[in-house]
Length: 556
Image 1 (tube, rainbow, N blue to C red):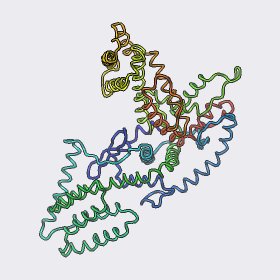
Image 2 (image 1 turned 180 degrees about the horizontal axis):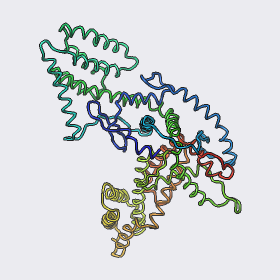
Image 3 (image 1 turned 135 degrees about the vertical axis):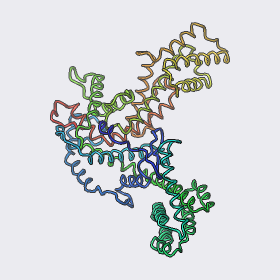
Image 4 (image 1 turned 90 degrees about the vertical axis):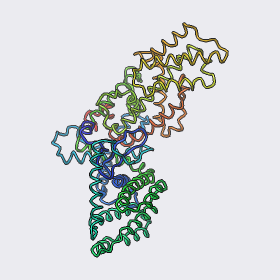
């Protein structure tokens, strides 16, 4: 999957002309989406088609596919019992220990361009659906091209030519309304897409006033009052728009020149479509969270049907986690190998992602949609490791009493994070500045509370230990890093991480709030991933953990 995804166009890309949109939210990268808000709404209803009261136009019916999937799951249901008997009586907590029916020796085949495009669409849809569910700040925004860019200049030239052409037609004697009628048809369709199912009266009113057959007849007899129609459109927009657009509607009511008015009408209609798409996603999000697991799994299965070897990196990732877990577990009876739980292996694999080298391309295919999210968590964990290590060094050098002074720890955290954030210098150079600033803060606080300032020897020790934290094999950094990973790993064992009460290791009290936030986010992301890709993980782990008893088991 990773190889093919790198060849596919991104799910969000720039396009010129009216109707550019940007999918944003949280810390995700911002791209301009090739989908209009209406297509985003179609995707939302496709994910939640099972219990949705209304289906969007042109939506595909996947009931047959779902039926086949149900039958396949029933045919493979016996694997769960086999796995439980191999593991023993221990609870693995693996969701749906079954493997999709894929042959591990599928012969290579040529993929057509049509299949590549379909796969690109499916991967793009799956990515957007995943973001809608996982990103609480996911929303669509209008995107503007950079000032003086070629795209912006071309767009402005084309738009100016279009509106100049409309103005020339309306200024003819008698006026020509062919282009204006097409615009009125577009406006009518846009207004109808903004209506809710209960807006029966408004739907009828729009159809009555914007009756295109009647408008064409009026245009033929030079009896079309286009100003009246524009006033009706602005009034209807005022009825349907969100309160945030009231200022835009007020500006529309102040325009009298018909071409400028229509130009602004289309601009505001685009904003209202975005508002409707964001409203629809927010309203249906609880339902989407229930349906997205099956949707993402079915789309990924469709991808695997076309690329049977698409779990290559996932298998290598779980194999490394299996070996690491097996080496850390002592034999249960004499020389007999210890039984390793699939849940323990999977959790170890998840934690290894927080140490993943960002420059490598062999990222697990099942984790690609969350890669940027996990990389951000990794950066936060690395920063907190440095902060906790610096605080521990400061406490050991200046005395534990100083860390108990009111506001001292918060001040040191603030100074350290400020110096570590947003700098393009080498970490070693940053730590030099951090050590100097920490020394000044310590020497400033000690006399204020009746303590003796640091001696020259203590100053050298404090600065030297802070500057050596990033060296390979540094004892303090390894100790704090191991405790942080151990604490975060505990969140993966709780279905409700907010209620997780496992013990905080020593030295992490100053960063407890930040660690708990990271742990909750990590647990939510990985729990969703486990529920979606659990069957695939199960097939791989059954082969890795029970190779001897299930030598012929397919890894997928």
